[in-house]
Length: 537
Image: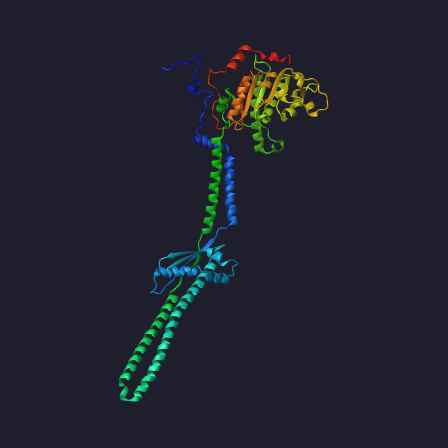
């Protein structure tokens, strides 16, 4: 049996619903779909950039058109087939052949560069496949026609030169033997005139002449055979398949290039979005905000910033602005409802976390609504830079003698009473002496929360605070720190609002029932009507 905690409080470490318990990041299909939908423009932009990069590459390096041809190259039967084909390929790769071809075609390229556009494939012992790339199909066919004709002529020259060397050598030997035959013939004639005393020598001379004649006849036969073989090799080597353009090669290259750019850009965009979504600690869901601030998030709206009036003549833009107006009014109604709640006092601080620029529109909307109902409304701008929307709305919220939008003279964190406030118009002027500020009626405070400043300065104006968080803008740690600072200052953190909420956010944003902080309980019990503590200021 496990012993109960000594202080009677539940063990938070064993409670999976505790606020302080960190929640793991679950990468599910819903999470991936939401992240991609949230940053769909990044994926689309990366896809477009990938297509643009692929298209630029194709423009810089146009896809080559190709033509193909096949050659039948016969060889001397006395030569090994492998060696013969290797010789044929080597002849195609020589600089002499490339130079002759480039000169014949009139191309302004180096012979080495021209050879790079030629692909050679061996098919068997006599068939050679040639593939040539060129800027277009017609040019590829023209160049390959020149290559095949020049190559066959060049190869015939090389084979004839080799055969001629052999034939010349044989002819030299034949000439030398014929000279020896003539000498023997002269000697035989002399021995025949000498009579019977030289019969043996005459027989030897006749025998030698016959041997030489036999050798001459054999050499002449070799000459004829070599000449015939060379002629047969040259005559039987021919173009089997004439050069023809390879259809669709350039189109396939373009399609593959664009598809590669599309896939690479999409993968880069989706990968970037998912990487930052997984590693980010930004608050995006109502449940995350409630867990970080330890307070309910009963209100969530989308964007509330009004669109520029110059674009409202476009019907889709006008519809978007109308939806933003509705969202802004919903948030303003939540502020009014909390501000006018009975027995809660007439002062409320609307604190923004990195979003006071857009939050000012909702505060101004709430102030306009209260003024339209006949309430005396005073708005205090405690933001560091000042809300432009509150400044523009100052003429609508009160009389000319008592402007209703006030702002501290110096730093908002150092202001402690009405004596430190001046109307917004005088604050901007800096020359005219402003009238003394008075905090009458309902007081609505717009402030920004900064962990470096804290929330102690808000105790001079109110003891009730609502916090507004924009989805994807503030971190969990920052929201948790701000919530702790608000409670440590003795302020009652009533609720939180989420701005820019996503459509896929279906979390409740409610804290666990029956759980409240000691500061909240003390505030509700000890100070049921806190508004009176600020009247003396």
